[in-house]
Length: 184
Image (cartoon, rainbow, N blue to C red; front, side):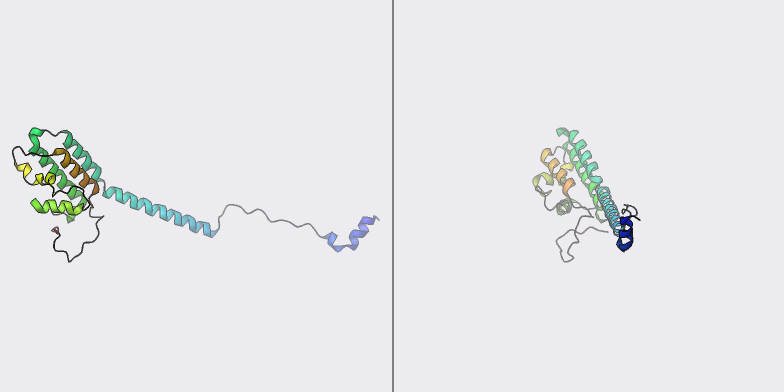
Protein backbone atom coordinates (compact mmCIF):
# COMPACT_ATOMS: atom_id res chain seq x y z
CA UNK A 1 0.00 0.00 0.00
CA UNK A 2 1.16 3.36 -0.88
CA UNK A 3 1.77 5.83 1.94
CA UNK A 4 -0.27 8.52 0.16
CA UNK A 5 -3.27 6.22 -0.06
CA UNK A 6 -3.16 5.65 3.64
CA UNK A 7 -3.03 9.40 4.25
CA UNK A 8 -6.00 9.94 1.93
CA UNK A 9 -7.94 7.20 3.66
CA UNK A 10 -7.36 8.86 6.99
CA UNK A 11 -8.29 12.40 5.73
CA UNK A 12 -12.01 12.50 4.84
CA UNK A 13 -11.70 15.99 3.22
CA UNK A 14 -9.40 14.60 0.58
CA UNK A 15 -12.27 12.43 -0.65
CA UNK A 16 -14.50 15.46 -1.51
CA UNK A 17 -14.89 16.48 -5.15
CA UNK A 18 -13.86 19.93 -6.36
CA UNK A 19 -16.37 22.86 -6.40
CA UNK A 20 -18.42 23.10 -9.61
CA UNK A 21 -19.15 26.68 -10.72
CA UNK A 22 -22.60 27.41 -12.18
CA UNK A 23 -22.92 28.15 -15.89
CA UNK A 24 -22.41 31.78 -16.97
CA UNK A 25 -25.53 33.90 -16.99
CA UNK A 26 -26.73 34.46 -20.55
CA UNK A 27 -28.12 37.65 -22.07
CA UNK A 28 -31.35 35.96 -23.10
CA UNK A 29 -33.99 35.94 -21.75
CA UNK A 30 -33.62 39.29 -19.98
CA UNK A 31 -34.96 39.89 -16.50
CA UNK A 32 -38.42 41.44 -16.11
CA UNK A 33 -36.94 44.84 -15.24
CA UNK A 34 -35.30 45.04 -18.67
CA UNK A 35 -38.64 44.16 -20.29
CA UNK A 36 -40.33 47.00 -18.40
CA UNK A 37 -37.58 49.41 -19.43
CA UNK A 38 -37.94 48.35 -23.08
CA UNK A 39 -41.72 48.85 -22.97
CA UNK A 40 -41.30 52.29 -21.37
CA UNK A 41 -38.77 53.36 -24.03
CA UNK A 42 -41.03 52.14 -26.84
CA UNK A 43 -44.02 54.01 -25.36
CA UNK A 44 -42.02 57.22 -24.98
CA UNK A 45 -40.73 56.99 -28.56
CA UNK A 46 -44.19 56.23 -29.97
CA UNK A 47 -45.75 59.12 -28.04
CA UNK A 48 -43.02 61.52 -29.15
CA UNK A 49 -43.39 60.49 -32.78
CA UNK A 50 -47.17 60.85 -32.56
CA UNK A 51 -47.03 64.37 -31.11
CA UNK A 52 -44.26 65.57 -33.44
CA UNK A 53 -46.13 64.28 -36.47
CA UNK A 54 -49.39 65.85 -35.29
CA UNK A 55 -47.62 69.17 -34.77
CA UNK A 56 -46.05 68.99 -38.23
CA UNK A 57 -49.41 68.20 -39.85
CA UNK A 58 -51.14 71.01 -37.95
CA UNK A 59 -48.57 73.48 -39.24
CA UNK A 60 -48.28 72.10 -42.78
CA UNK A 61 -50.13 75.12 -44.16
CA UNK A 62 -47.35 77.51 -43.12
CA UNK A 63 -44.69 76.46 -45.68
CA UNK A 64 -47.37 76.42 -48.38
CA UNK A 65 -48.45 79.94 -47.45
CA UNK A 66 -44.82 81.12 -47.44
CA UNK A 67 -44.29 79.67 -50.92
CA UNK A 68 -47.43 81.41 -52.13
CA UNK A 69 -46.22 84.68 -50.58
CA UNK A 70 -42.88 84.35 -52.39
CA UNK A 71 -44.72 83.71 -55.64
CA UNK A 72 -46.89 86.82 -55.11
CA UNK A 73 -43.79 88.87 -54.26
CA UNK A 74 -41.98 87.73 -57.40
CA UNK A 75 -44.95 88.67 -59.58
CA UNK A 76 -45.27 92.11 -57.97
CA UNK A 77 -45.65 94.89 -60.48
CA UNK A 78 -45.83 98.49 -59.13
CA UNK A 79 -48.35 99.29 -61.86
CA UNK A 80 -50.68 96.58 -60.49
CA UNK A 81 -50.34 97.25 -56.78
CA UNK A 82 -54.10 96.90 -56.18
CA UNK A 83 -53.98 93.33 -57.53
CA UNK A 84 -50.95 92.67 -55.33
CA UNK A 85 -52.87 93.84 -52.24
CA UNK A 86 -55.85 91.69 -53.19
CA UNK A 87 -53.56 88.65 -53.53
CA UNK A 88 -51.96 89.37 -50.13
CA UNK A 89 -55.35 89.81 -48.48
CA UNK A 90 -56.62 86.58 -50.02
CA UNK A 91 -53.49 84.75 -48.88
CA UNK A 92 -53.95 86.01 -45.31
CA UNK A 93 -57.58 84.87 -45.26
CA UNK A 94 -56.73 81.44 -46.67
CA UNK A 95 -53.94 81.04 -44.13
CA UNK A 96 -56.28 82.09 -41.32
CA UNK A 97 -58.88 79.56 -42.50
CA UNK A 98 -56.24 76.82 -42.54
CA UNK A 99 -54.85 77.69 -39.14
CA UNK A 100 -58.09 78.40 -37.31
CA UNK A 101 -60.66 76.24 -39.17
CA UNK A 102 -64.08 76.59 -37.55
CA UNK A 103 -62.92 79.23 -35.06
CA UNK A 104 -62.17 81.80 -37.77
CA UNK A 105 -64.85 84.33 -38.61
CA UNK A 106 -64.34 84.85 -42.33
CA UNK A 107 -66.70 87.83 -42.36
CA UNK A 108 -64.28 90.05 -40.43
CA UNK A 109 -63.59 93.27 -42.30
CA UNK A 110 -61.80 96.54 -41.85
CA UNK A 111 -60.33 97.42 -38.48
CA UNK A 112 -61.68 94.21 -36.90
CA UNK A 113 -59.75 92.14 -39.46
CA UNK A 114 -56.48 93.96 -38.74
CA UNK A 115 -57.07 93.70 -34.97
CA UNK A 116 -57.75 89.98 -35.30
CA UNK A 117 -54.51 89.49 -37.26
CA UNK A 118 -52.59 91.39 -34.59
CA UNK A 119 -54.23 89.40 -31.77
CA UNK A 120 -53.01 86.15 -33.29
CA UNK A 121 -49.43 87.42 -33.23
CA UNK A 122 -49.17 89.73 -30.19
CA UNK A 123 -45.36 89.79 -30.27
CA UNK A 124 -45.23 91.21 -33.81
CA UNK A 125 -42.59 93.87 -34.33
CA UNK A 126 -44.69 95.61 -36.97
CA UNK A 127 -48.39 94.94 -36.45
CA UNK A 128 -51.00 95.15 -39.19
CA UNK A 129 -52.41 98.22 -37.48
CA UNK A 130 -49.26 100.08 -38.61
CA UNK A 131 -49.19 102.13 -41.80
CA UNK A 132 -47.84 99.32 -43.96
CA UNK A 133 -50.56 96.92 -42.79
CA UNK A 134 -53.39 99.46 -42.98
CA UNK A 135 -52.99 99.63 -46.73
CA UNK A 136 -54.89 96.33 -46.83
CA UNK A 137 -58.05 98.19 -45.80
CA UNK A 138 -58.48 100.55 -48.74
CA UNK A 139 -55.55 99.77 -51.05
CA UNK A 140 -57.23 96.94 -52.98
CA UNK A 141 -60.07 99.35 -53.89
CA UNK A 142 -57.88 102.16 -55.17
CA UNK A 143 -56.68 102.46 -58.74
CA UNK A 144 -53.01 103.08 -57.90
CA UNK A 145 -52.39 102.74 -54.14
CA UNK A 146 -48.98 103.68 -52.84
CA UNK A 147 -47.56 100.82 -50.82
CA UNK A 148 -44.32 99.79 -49.21
CA UNK A 149 -44.25 96.28 -50.68
CA UNK A 150 -41.09 95.23 -48.85
CA UNK A 151 -42.42 96.18 -45.42
CA UNK A 152 -45.84 94.63 -46.16
CA UNK A 153 -44.11 91.46 -47.29
CA UNK A 154 -42.14 91.37 -44.01
CA UNK A 155 -45.28 91.87 -41.93
CA UNK A 156 -47.18 89.13 -43.76
CA UNK A 157 -44.22 86.74 -43.65
CA UNK A 158 -43.77 87.31 -39.91
CA UNK A 159 -47.48 86.72 -39.31
CA UNK A 160 -47.46 83.46 -41.27
CA UNK A 161 -44.43 82.20 -39.35
CA UNK A 162 -45.30 83.41 -35.86
CA UNK A 163 -49.07 83.51 -35.41
CA UNK A 164 -50.59 81.22 -32.81
CA UNK A 165 -53.04 78.88 -34.51
CA UNK A 166 -56.04 77.23 -32.86
CA UNK A 167 -53.92 74.42 -31.35
CA UNK A 168 -51.30 76.75 -29.90
CA UNK A 169 -53.54 79.28 -28.23
CA UNK A 170 -54.14 79.42 -24.52
CA UNK A 171 -57.76 79.57 -23.40
CA UNK A 172 -59.00 83.16 -23.47
CA UNK A 173 -60.35 84.87 -20.36
CA UNK A 174 -64.12 84.94 -20.62
CA UNK A 175 -64.28 88.35 -18.91
CA UNK A 176 -62.36 90.22 -21.61
CA UNK A 177 -64.83 92.29 -23.63
CA UNK A 178 -62.21 94.04 -25.76
CA UNK A 179 -61.30 90.92 -27.74
CA UNK A 180 -62.90 90.24 -31.09
CA UNK A 181 -64.75 86.97 -30.69
CA UNK A 182 -65.12 84.75 -33.78
CA UNK A 183 -68.65 83.73 -34.71
CA UNK A 184 -69.55 80.08 -34.81
